[in-house]
Image 1 (cartoon, rainbow, N blue to C red):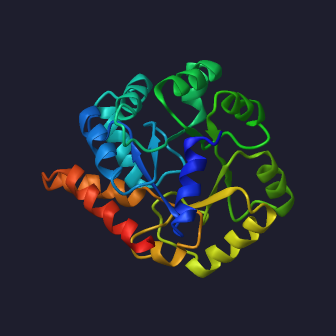
Image 2 (cartoon, one colour):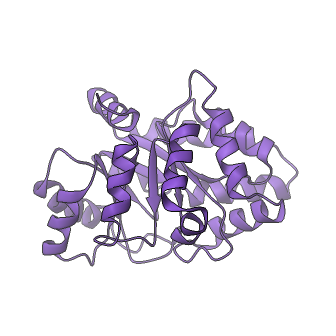
Image 3 (cartoon, rainbow, N blue to C red):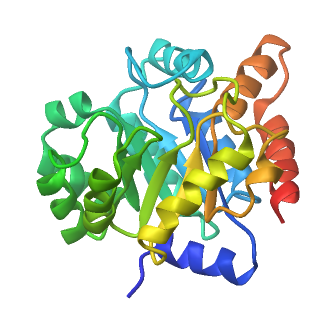
Length: 266
């Protein structure tokens, strides 16, 4: 039986469009507001990436770092992240959830205990940014045993030989980092070049779902809609910050923004 992430890609391919994946930090700017945001953007997003806040998010640009700091300031811990996912999953219209973060928190919690807890609360996938292949082999195997998709990362500098090995050992979804930058950086590579690299990866294994992340905005998303999926994160985190500064409701703003993004790729 296909897991919810694979079923989502099957559905979006049938609809001849990429899956829209959104990224927000759990607990930004409170547990209640974070949950409301997840429920609200579910109207238009296909898969929700949820970051667990970290005090040194090395792969992230200022927008996501600020989101993390706001959540940490509110005292959000890993147990709260699990609680947010658990509450969200009670909604019958809930979308598949991928938790994203750094290995230090997983290690401190205990790998097997962490994966079991993910399964228990309804997490469907995991991205551990600083746990690369082949070091992640055992962790990925444990995820698979628990029906959790472990998402491998590829970048423009990944050699073809290494790429083939990563793709061969990957689960149903692979994340292609479009450029060498932190998240939210200005797109330094043309969408055409990104798709060129993307197509080279797809030729290695067409059956795996390949999503593109980093530097995707409402200006560039339409040009990349031939991908299996597109991840938008920094744009949303920036909108949360903007709304909070203006004393506006980020839930309404994000719903409108994700609706607009979905329209551009449909």
